Image (cartoon, rainbow, N blue to C red):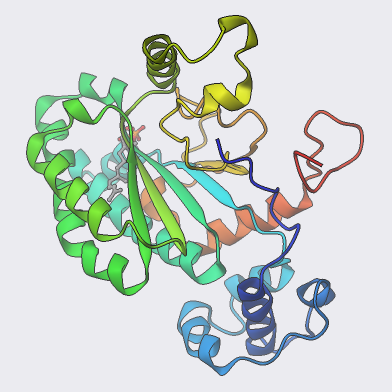
Length: 307
Ligand code: FPP
């Protein structure tokens, strides 16, 4: 598994420039943290138009954006998108309309991650347990995903976003799988932002699959198996562990999602239903995340798990 540095250690140039552009745009003083690692970041014309369309000066989002330290954003955000059904029920709509509205929220959060410079976003879009739902809802949900992939591929290409899938793909309907694999192939060279869709995914099944793979590979002596080696057999072998896990709709559960990987993730739970989740809520989660002290079991806060 890639043991990434915890976010905020280096604060790459993109973050510094975005930070500078945001604070300039929003009319406030440059928060010192934008420049902590580098001295004054140069004013960069290229970033301004992007941010202008993204955050309205004077808005609540603008206030939140100004509180952020762009050198300490989470590297990997994972989301349990919950509440689509309740959102629809409250509007006397069929459940699929909740999922459809949820797909719009997905677009907004993907865009936010791209603009802010968050590197990995993992979305829990279909769990292995979701097969227990009515057949009609399941079929429509897969159709929605297929349509989303057909429509969004151009946006992913344009914005250099990589798409990856985790989960047991063999059981994913064939036409959806074909689309997923097409878009995965199309975007595999991008590394600006990776959007990971957890589909037909379950954390316990992933751990069992890893055990089976290790068994088959005969990878070393079981007595010396360590976390690093084990992680290489998970679906997420190429990804850093999530720093922040967001769950919508007010449920305090992890629902079999990334059980191994969220060992040290910060949890952020909001009562907002997923279809109502907007960049404002995403920014709130990020601001809150930055107030947390991440100790990874030690006494003092650390900036890196390995240091
Ligand atoms: C949970 O809400 C949500 C899901 C099982 C599906 C999530 C799918 C989407 C947001 C649709 C599109 C996804 C992508 C990636 C384009 P729920 O139905 O369990 O809500 P409830 O708990 O209120 O019933």
